Image 1 (cartoon, rainbow, N blue to C red):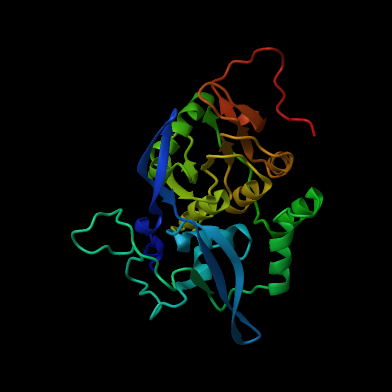
Image 2 (image 1 turned 30 degrees about the horizontal axis):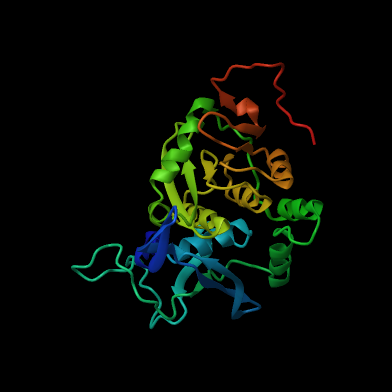
Length: 326
C-alpha cells in the first residue's frame, strides 16, 4: 500500500473570507478578513472481532480541514490503537462514491486555471473518515474506550492518567538525543515562517519536527493544538518514520499532559514549547525521560527535565541539577 497517498492537503478548505470593520483609533473602514475554518471530523474505526468485521465511531474532533488521514493516524498512534503503519489497511471518507485508490494521491485536485488557495465550497461526506485496520490487529473496544477516557486527564487524578499511559505506551529505549542550547532560539521563527494559514489568519496552532542540527522536517497547523500534533505524528507514521527517537517536537503553545502523552507514544525524544508546561506534563517528562523545554523566547527558555542533553551553555548562579524536584 502506498501510504504517501494519504497527504490529503485541502488548502482551499482551510480558510474562508468574511467582512469586518477595522478600527484604527476612532476611524473605521470596511475590510475583508480571512478566518481559519473549523469543522467537525468524525473518526470511525473498522476492525475485526470474533470473525466479524465491525465499525465504530471512536472520536469527533473540531479541526481545520486538510491532512485528515494524518490526523486520524496520529490519533490512533498516540492512543495506542496502532503501533506501526502496517496496522492500517485503508482509509476513506464515508460518503465517497468509492474508497480511494491506494495508488493515487489523496490531494484534492483544483481545476486548471484556479489558484492553489482558491476557497472551495463545503463538500458533504468529507467530515467522516473511516480507518480500516488489518484483520490481524486485535483491539478490545472496552479497553480502548477506557484508555481514551483515562489518558484525557479530564475529571480524574494525574496518578491515574500516568498509570494509563504506562499501560499503553510502547517500549522506550534510552534517550540519547543531544542538542546545542543556542539552536533552540531559532525554532520559533522557523516554525512561524512555514505556517501558511497562520500567516493569513493568525488563528492556528502549529507543531513541527526538528532534528538535533536544527533542521525543520515537517509542520502541521490546526485550530486545535492536539490536532496539529496528531497530524504531524500521523504523517511520520504513514511515512514509516516512527518511533521518532531522533526528533524534537516543537509546540506553538503550552505543553499539556495530552501533548506529552502524544510525544511518549510516538517515541519523541524532546518537547519544546513557547508556552508553559503543566505540572503533569513535567511528571510525564521525568517518568519517560523526555527532554522538556518551556517558555522559549528570543533570549531565554526554561529546562524542566533533561538538562544533561543540552550542550554549549555556561553555568551561572550556582550548581545546575540534572534532576528537578517534585
